Image 1 (cartoon, helix red, strand yellow):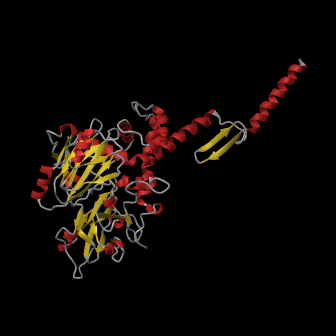
Image 2: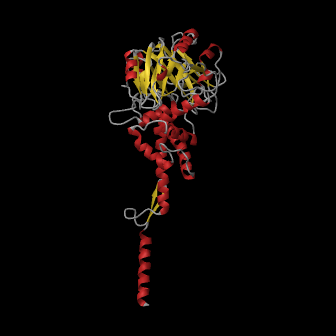
Image 3: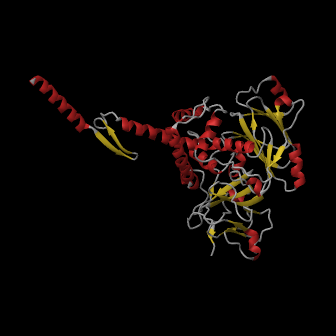
Amino acid sequence: MLKHLTVTASALALLAATSLSAETVDTRIGPLEFTHDFANGYPTTEAQEKLFDEIDFQRACQVYLWALPIVSMEQWRWSHENELGVENGQALYALSYEDKIGGLTYNATTPYVLPFIDLTEEPWIVEVPSAELRGAFNDFWQVGVAKVEGGRKYILVGPDADPDQDDVLEAAYWGFQVVKFNTNNVLPGIRLMADDDETRQAILDNLKIYPFSERKDPKPRGYVPADGKAYSAWQPRGMAYWERLADVINKEPVQERDRFFLAMLKPLGIEKGKPFEPGERQRKILEEAALVGEAMAKANDFNKERLEDAFYVEDSMWEFATVSHPSQRREHHDDLDARAAWFYEAVTNDPRMHAQRYGGEGQIYMATYRDGDGDWLDGGTNYTLNVPPDAPAEAFWSMTVYDVATRALTINNEKLADRSSKMDLLVNDDGSVDLYIGPDKPEGDKAENWIETLPGKAWFPYFRFYSPKDAFIDRTWVLPNIEKAN
């Protein structure tokens, strides 16, 4: 009996010692309990559950940022098919303000010709008529693979196709340029630079897009006018974001650089080759991560101080919007944050969109989110922007206003989101142009220079220079800040 009591007492003492040595660690995700001190202890069941939830949540937030370009493309393609009735290989023709308010930071000045093409089954041919246009062939990660040029014929080849097969080589012999992609779905994005309707229509009528198998008897897929129909081509919010991502992962090959991100998605229910059927826990984490992930995207985008290529000039609130390299690659890393910043608010990225790097060939996009006082731009406040004389744009310049909520053309009563040098603007005696942005319409001729904004909505502009001149590139001409109106 005495021996039994001794053992029992020893056991109790051991348990007491164990209990006393347990440690609770305070962390940013709350208290975590371990069976001994942190170094020697195991996480308790409750701590393990909390940690696994946090692992999956943090990974989902980072995956949100990583996936922005491809989710954007899939939503864009989905909206063309399901909201506008555009089929594979057909081009959407977006001309008017109403045609463009569904897309991410569309240029309000030039028409767009936008055909999504699926190369999964076979290559496709694109014949571009001789015309004044600008564009690029983009893969679904929004890498600009090649220029679209007038008077050229192209064979678009997917990742699983052999560009050296006899029939492709034969077509190349006859003058077709072979464009190889790393994704199955692609977008030849084209801007028409002609101002007259007759020239634009001739381009549309002579643009030919058809499968490679029809090369001896082509049946071009033609185009579909947007006709002001409603669509939403920006990244969706909530679970729809993850649904688009799951869909496109099953359509596209996994890039070698993305394999770790696919590993992060697996515990969240998104796995290549499998349907997306999230459980209650996964859904809860994904819904919160979609919110926090987008919040991170906003911080990363609207304050580009961490992005090395954003800087314009000292004391300027303007930044270069296209902060990601066209290839999305640097010497030792890929453009994770810069890519997320650009593709949260915009679409496509090719060398012509970085004209400051290429001697003025192409265009430059400047963005700002604050006025000269450093305050966020707000739809309830009136602002002015003085564009100095001799704005250095060979083709034209434009100032376009976008809603922060959608990053699309601002929706206002005037149904007009831009002012440009192509318009009949009021010009000051010194050759400068005062633009007015705000809820209150200026008096008299100043109204010709006004872009309406609505109270209760945040906004931001792009100032575009098409074919910028040396004065912009060497900074001898500087775009002033947007200022609050008196």
